[in-house]
Image (cartoon, rainbow, N blue to C red; front, side, top):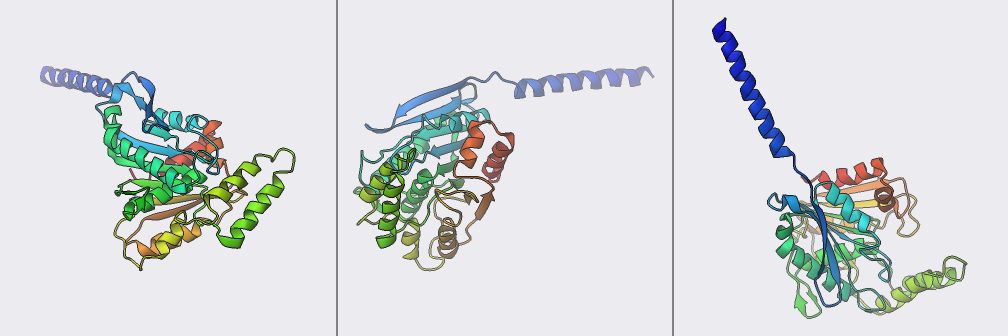
Length: 311
């Protein structure tokens, strides 16, 4: 009996010590910080990280804002950075040149490429794991993130530089335009934006029309679907991301549902064994962003489910 009691006492203390060790391992006081970095002479990026976890390499979220190639900023969508930071990720939000600062889509691509290179080379200093990067873009940012990934994976030349490929865990374009009009269709769309801009409250559309006129008319190299159409079936081993998840919304009037289909079709055709997902939600163009900004638990859970599907 005494032996049994002694064994029970020993087991109790072993359990107590082990429990304390686990608790001490799991508990820490977060030190959430944001640092702004000038990654070029004309653009910055923000790194959201936990200074108490620099030695524990964490997955990284890089987010590219939208705005019709002519407006928007990382600061206006900073809630995306803090959201992922609070979920245990290292998150990076970046700015890039917009119209009228530039009249070339390739300048935007080169900016994003340069920022992504900076992340690959430096994110470990902030507790991030460069081998676990998810790239997310919204609207025009979705187009640019995808275009940059494609041009880098294919080793295309942009602004005199041969781009080097990335290896992302995941590319997530939110409400993006993946096949862009050309010729008369493009001109008609621009004219429609100008006409709509005369309606009270829609005057901002004139800038969108002007941006498309200067960035797209008479130019090429901005359509990732058209780029991939130039490649034979199953000729690309890896297109920059282990998984592609295209997100669309059924009430999106800015980039209507269906614009992801041509890109999905081309990736499936030219890439050997691609992993592609296509999510459709009931909402408008800002569905995911508004959900995060307004702390909607259901939408936050939907976004996290997408992100965490590769981990």
